[in-house]
Image (tube, rainbow, N blue to C red):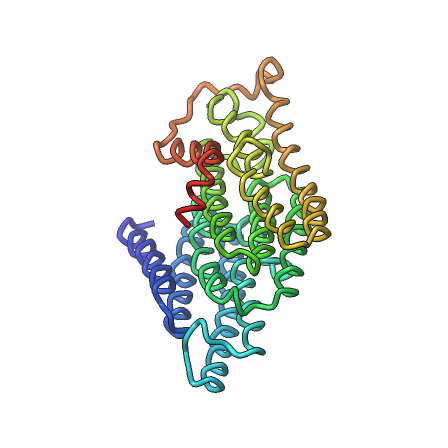
Length: 344
């Protein structure tokens, strides 16, 4: 892609998200979401492949449907209340706006577009779609969290955790694994949204850090399949080792970064006297733990001396400082979790 065009698209992404973050008016927030949607589509189709075109079409149709629902609901709400303020919603339109934002995020059962879209686009665009594109809808959800129906959030959260774990079990494509991982993590965030929005924000920031670290690592070794990861040890043994740890961090194992949000969410659910919900959530998360451990097991099987001679590469992988920074954050933030919570 032309560097000038690429800069314009990335600048538009930044402007769209910033506009939504700064707005207290539904129309401005909707315009920011639309700018975001339109800016990422050229990035999806920068490699003119039929699968990329299909992914961009699916993404556009889904996001356009969700945006239309947001605009219609906000208009009807303004007609009824006389206000365009984001925090002033009447009862029937709160549910429709929440569902539209969850559709933009890719929460189950409105998740069907996300794995297919991420599978059809490059890793760099998948990184943007999995992290940056979720900031604006999540911010709007956080702003209306006190108005959203609790039963809806619990249902969507549990469904997303189950689908995120179940869908990733039989995948061989790493981009689809990351898509189902995203669905599962968003389920944890939505589950606690009504009880403790600050904890949702904390979980969201750590999710962005860990997902970005994983995508940067995959981009460094140019792997999109599990079979390609299995032969990456000779190219960059340190990077493959840190990728295993990032996967365990995404699974939520101590003492890595991903353990802190899961621990705090379970403690918050117990504090709210929802022990049954906490138990079901922990059991449902075992599905995701299985496919993370499966990926880690595939990597461990290929460590020396198990590497076949045909899979040995003579070249090495150049790791950028950004990859090193994100990887360090994705693994070692756990001791600093209380400090981050105090800041939030």
